[in-house]
Image (tube, rainbow, N blue to C red; front, top):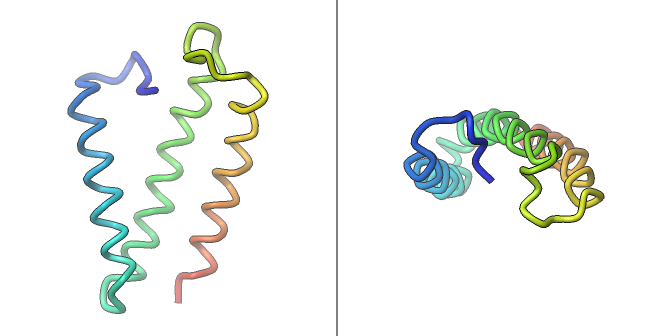
Length: 87
């Protein structure tokens, strides 16, 4: 799913996974919750690049096009859901 134009795919995949885990833990604690939520929104914005890139022929990995299109509004819903929990 990592776009071909990004370097060091494996490293980026592991780094993004680690970041997701760390931000998930950050949400659990009041002192880091807002920073973690803002960072999650930024990460979801970056992940939009991946979702849009997968819409191009040859990048779909066998996933039906309608599912790829559905992921984009879901991404915005996740951003909104995260945003309303910033307090």
